Every structure is written in structure tokens, then in C-alpha cells.
Amino acid sequence: MDTNFLETIEVETGARPSATVIWMHGLGADGHDFEPIVPELRLPPSLPVRFIFPHAPIRKVTLNMGMAMRAWYDILELGGVREDGEGLRMAQESIEALIAREESRGVAADRIVLAGFSQGGAVTFQAGLRHPSRLAGLMALSTYLPLAGTVEDERHESNRDVPIFMAHGTADPMIAIGRAQQSRKMLEALGYAVEWHEYPMPHSVCPQEIGDISEWLVRILK
Image (cartoon, rainbow, N blue to C red; front, side, top):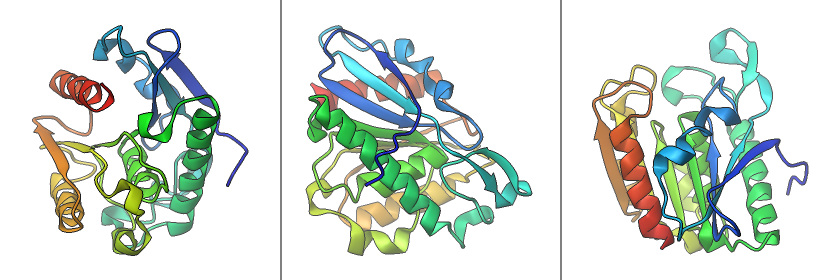
């Protein structure tokens, strides 16, 4: 496991957090991208949560003419016919290291949520479905299931019934909602229960979605 931890931003909603949310940003953003969402979630004082927002490494992205930017893995082409399996697995190892660090700080795996937007959501699926200990939940926003053909063989029994929250914009020009719906169907065909939400928005997050995320977090972490 990679012990060179990613640089992260941490926000705690109360003293002595009893749960952790590791939230991955999208392509070209950084850990600050979703930091402002924490107060908007309005989590109850009885549920102190540590939010960890890691920065993805800086790498060249093929689809963006080889420009270097923060990216969890390379994007070789639109639609994902060819995927950067090596990059996805390296990202998985980095998130596994953050999970292990939280466990060393006293937060059990079943009190840890993996969350992510776009590329970060794909990493959520890549790491979460394969994690060997039961997690509290997986939150995948405006994203898709990466390396879908490997999930059945590589997934871990511990997370066969992990709560999954998927949300997508009906007008998303970056990742078509049809691709996300296909990912949902693949997950359901493997026996996962997916809580699905869609909103009239582009590749973004909206207030109604934030409210639904808050309700889901409270429900799975109560």
C-alpha cells in the first residue's frame, strides 16, 4: 500500500469526529473544490464528521492535449472505451492509504464514506467496491463505473451491500446521463442497491442535491 499520503484538506463539523467522509474532486480541480459544501450540509451536532478532501496528483491528460493538471487518472478518449487502468489502480491505492490512516486515528472502516464528483466518483467506485472491510457508504456524483468489466471478479464480499448514492444532471454535457444510468444498471445486475437521484442541471451540484446528500449521510451514519 502507498504510504506517501496525498496532500489533503480537513474540515471537522464537531469535536471528536465519529465518522469520516473522504471526498475526491473532479478533473482539473483540487481539494478545495468541495470544501465549501460542508456547512451547506447542515449536519446535526450529534453527528461530528471529519471531511477529508485530497488533492489528486498533477499529471498529463491525453484528452486535454497532454496538458498537466490535477487528475486521478488519465482520460484517453471520450466515452471510456479505452481506460487508464494503471492510473485508476494507483488512485485506488492512494485512497486505501487514506482509509488506513483514518482507521489508525480511531475511525472504523464502517464509519468511513467514500465520495467523489466526476473523476473522483469513478475513483470512489474503483476503491470502494474492492475494499476488504465494510465501508459506511459510497457517494458517486456526476460519474460512471470505471473498469466495469473487472468489478465482478475484483469486488470484495465485505461491500456487497454497501449503501450507494448516485446522482447526475439530466443536462450533463461532460458525462452523459445515459452513461451513468448504464453504470447503475451494471451495479444493480451485480446485486448492489443503488439510491439514484437526477436533477435538472449540467455537470455540477445543485441545492436539492446537497439536501439529499445530507439526508443520506445522516441516515447511513446515525
